[in-house]
Each structure stands twice: as structure tokens, then as C-alpha cells.
Image 1 (cartoon, rainbow, N blue to C red):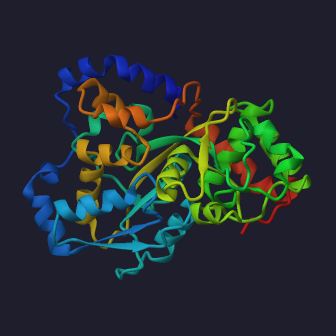
Image 2 (tube, rainbow, N blue to C red; image 1 turned 60 degrees about the vertical axis):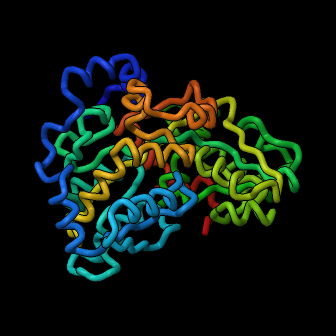
Length: 372
């Protein structure tokens, strides 16, 4: 059972990474022999395909990640399922396709932190330790290799300033009547990790704590009663058209949107002054993966220096960032693009699971907003 605070661990790793790497050589002791050689690529190429799910191209620069993977490993088709799916949808896709080796069965998933352990408990994922295993913080991975953190971000506000020039700076500001009919979550809080953790962040900003998320539900009930919350799932396209002027989303999604808009519309990103909540996502391989070798090769790429930096180009903080910084391999211009997320807090797995249970079961009764 993990009780150690992940933020503390990550911060400490910045300091000790160089020493640790020197001692362990940077390799994963439990990684299969073929994981970093041509044999894995040959086996993956023989399978010919990798099936992903829930990877929007503007999320963490997944478009760039997929293209880089295909360029590095020609002969492997990337079959992309339902880019806008949530974490719960990914898990259901594995369950629904246990006996299906066709193109609708996902090989790999990228889900919220709390979904990793539950998927392991249900026997839905299989273990695999990448060759850079030792440089992934211990509190961000399953010790047996069933799941491992990939990146994290902080919840922020993406604001279309052509529609709403008065930019909110904190969660309390969103309750102002001037924002009536202008705010939306980036998912359904009964299923989406991003939406669930948005409620968690609001709790931290409204008298709650990592162990008390009820104030987050109460906050959204107030936001909904005021008419400020739109019962739609926000995306960058709806922000661009002005249908949803204010989107609550991960900072990396919001910053990528600014790049995509290219000044039309004018928009800005605000990391709120309080309730700075850092959310970690995790990778895993389906226990029923039709292309298990392609899945392992995908993991090797994602957790290589190259893959981690491609994620960083999408404004994400990759899980091996401490190691990359310690070795000075991150371009300075890339470091300069990342926002100040100082003060962000990282909940433990137990805290996340408790919060998820409360939010998903009490959203309807407390808030009553039927997000769709």
C-alpha cells in the first residue's frame, strides 16, 4: 500500500537522480532481454499493428508521439480507437474485447492514476518493465510492472478572451454571474478522470483537503445552480467557436489549444491561484492485447528519452523528467515553455480512489448536472 506523498518523492528525485543513476546504471533490472534490441522490433513488425485508444493528437502531443513512433519503427500500423474516450471507456473496451483479436481490441491504455491498480486487480492488464524502469519514481509505478506513470499536469482554465475578456484567476471567480452559461468540464465526472480530478481540485480551493473532497461537489452544485456550468463536455473546438468560453482542463491541453488557435480566437491559460492539483496518468498493456510485442515496443519508445521529450513538447511533465533534467538532455527552450505549477499537490493512490468513489457516486445527487 502506497502512502508516501508522490510530490515529495518527485522533488527528492531531482536531487538524488544523478547519484541513483550512477549506482544503478540507469537500466531496469527486471526488463526482458529483448526489450531494447532488434528482436522486439522484429516481433512487433511481424504483428504489423498497434491498437491505441483515447489518444487525441492535441493531448500531450500524442499526434507527434504517434508520428515519431511510426517513423522510428516502419512496418507497424497504428490503429487509433475513439480518441475522445475517457479512462473508464478504455477499461470497458478491454472488457468488451477479451475474446476479440480484431481491430476493436486495444493493446495499450493511458488512464488516470486510480485506474491502474483497479485494472490490475481485475486482471485486465499484464506486467512489463521497460528498460528505463529504474528512473521512474517508485510511487508512480506498480512494483510488478503492471502499470507505470507516464506524465502529469495541473488543472487550469482555458479562456476564449474574444468572448470573455474578463479572465478568472481562481476557482472562486468562476461563481461570478458574469460567467453565466460559459464554463464546462472536460468530461463526465461520473466516468472521466480529468473531470473527477477537476472536482477534486475545486475541493482543495474551497476548504477541502486531499482526504475531504465533498467541498468540491458542493462547489460544483453552486456553480450549476448559478447557471454558470454548461452541461456539455468541453473540447478545444467548442472553446474556439465560443460555445464554451471557459474550459476546465489540464494545463497541457490548454496550452496546446493556444498553439492551435494561432491567435484566432484570442485565448489565454490560467493556472488558478489555489487548488493546484497535479494529476498523474499511467500506461499499461492489455492482458488480452492482440499485438503484445508491438505494445511492449510502444512502451519502450514512450519511456525512452526521445519519447519523454516528445511528450514534453506538448507541455506535459513526463514521469522521467527528474532523470532527464539531471542528465541535462532537455532543450532549454522546451523548459522555458512550461508554466509555473509550484505548489501543486499530488494525492496518494488511496486518496484518489476514495475521492473517485465519492465523486462518481454523489455527483447526480449533489450537483445534478447531466454532463453529456
